[in-house]
Image (cartoon, rainbow over all chains, first blue to last red; front, side, top):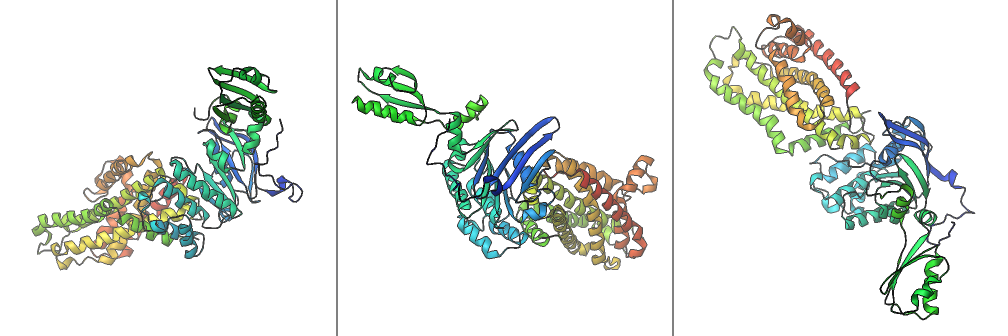
Length: 325
Length: 249
């Protein structure tokens, strides 16, 4: 089912060249095994210039392995990877200057001070000390510059890692499970930062097992499960394609309501419990149809809610199990 | 070539000194033990007859110095294990830092601390040693650094094999202290049982003990060129071996 949604950020189809030529990351038929375990199996996708691309799936699905193969930290058994036209393994040192990396569950020395870490990174990437100080300020770590790494909160540590990943003004930024273990408030702050990275014209490639994060942050996502990519698209299109059904909940005392509601075109199911109705139908139009029916028949309602499926539902539909299992 | 080596070494030194237990353990404890034992042995350390140099005159300072070397290596093994477990090595590796630079920085820090501890120890214990012995401190320090540098290569091999940081100290101690025992300091290598003699021949402690004792007694470096060569070869072999099996994560 093809549904156009104005909320989906569309790339100007006439001005921009076809998506394939704007890809900064190309992965084709990637395969990686650890002993007998197949971690990544025939994975192919592309990440376009200037987008936030998310690789989403449950823990152990192969997200980190895929990302590490793209970064050049791991050597794939099979398949081709190119980042900014470079080979991540052969051109590892050349590539390092053009990408920024935040690793899952990485740490720094417990007693290293924030400014010392930044100072080290500044010298490693041959940047100016002022750039490092500026980044710390930008990421809200200015007053923490003399703190030891071990005394930072989870959110502050992640912000420091983002700052370090950005010190070389990279063209592509890799963020692996960036907000895992953070409280919702810190998570939202980090999302803002990631959007900020995109606004500076950078490409972001991230992994997450949080569907909400993918939905709110990513321009496009690839769903990965057991080492295989199941589908790639914008979150909205994935939802429209795989979960077109919409649910409307309402409460009314009108005795004629049930009959009228059941007559709505495209309705799949009406369940009633006292004055409360739960209705399911398909397509974007369905909710409008319900509202139309209510107003046409002057049905008074005391409650009205719609439930739209999200990526979580898409995942459930595609894999047969919840991402949290 | 080793971009960031000096900055990282400087940071690692500061980071190490910020942990009170580590700094006290590696610097103060050896110095204290040396002074206390020196006091206990006080009289015997300064006999009027300096013609012979037995265990107390030569063996004791050499033993104390090798203890410093071992504690430096054990500390290094622990740090590497902790860094690997915590993902610090992994994070550093994802920068233009070359892996060799990361390990070299740690070795530099350990050698610096070893030299500092030795100098402190000798200064603190000076009054127990009669001036007549006039051990060349600079040469002896250099000899200890060469020895430590060679023993570090075993440390890397241990760090490569142990699964977690918790095993670093005990495994290191179980491997290193017996090697010190058969180094010739206590019993001549020649009078060891054949199996132990074979181990002693490839152990850096044997050559380290010989080199340190010689330099302490004022012998020339050229007399110990064989010891230095053996230490270098052992370093090269063990480093190559640990490069094969070293795990970064």
